[in-house]
Length: 243
Image (cartoon, rainbow, N blue to C red; front, side, top):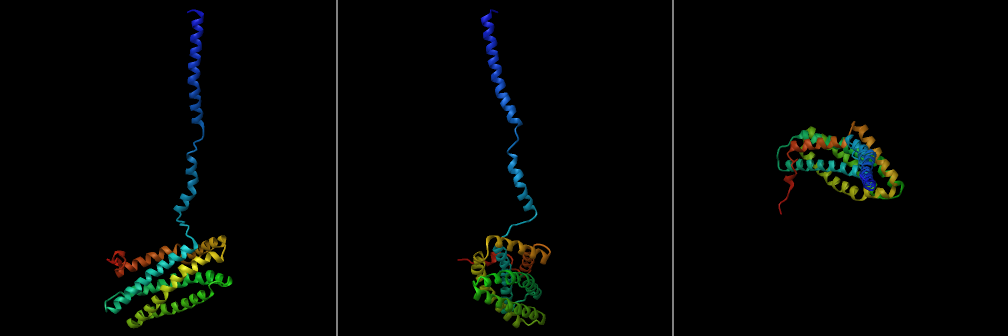
């Protein structure tokens, strides 16, 4: 082969080889770089662990208001019992005893104590909603008296006294919880800092777990659900009103 032609072929071969080496080297470099796609998965681990541990991250007001949901469901139980008393229909008095016991342990001794020890004093020290907190405290005290009357009426089988006590309890607690949900709890943000608000939620959670040995709200919901099913009022469809 003559010399010029050999030089041309050698030069062409060098160019082709360089063209192949360049992308292969680039590909190899990319293969050796750390995979960034795994970063989000590593960052997501703590939240996944938190979820697995059952930390539902409930705010202070949400915690208080969902406890009112438990109270509301017991008021529905009370109203159903009163309806049956008025209609002279049979009912299991043991379900009334369980409902009143739940009011005592979960609402009066726990939920209302949180309000009296941690919420009302903050409003009073800030000179805010004092008239409201005064009335709420008084209603708590009256509610405990009515709960005792309900329990005693079941023991003595005095349906007339039971009906009167239930009616008084329901009549007082409907506006009581509504006023707390729409006035007191929202105003809490005005009398405490964001840090103190968050700290209250953590404190409430510690008190709840110490008091009930776990998630008291879940335990209360389970008990209410059981009472509703035995009383025959668990199916929410039965409350649907046709237009």
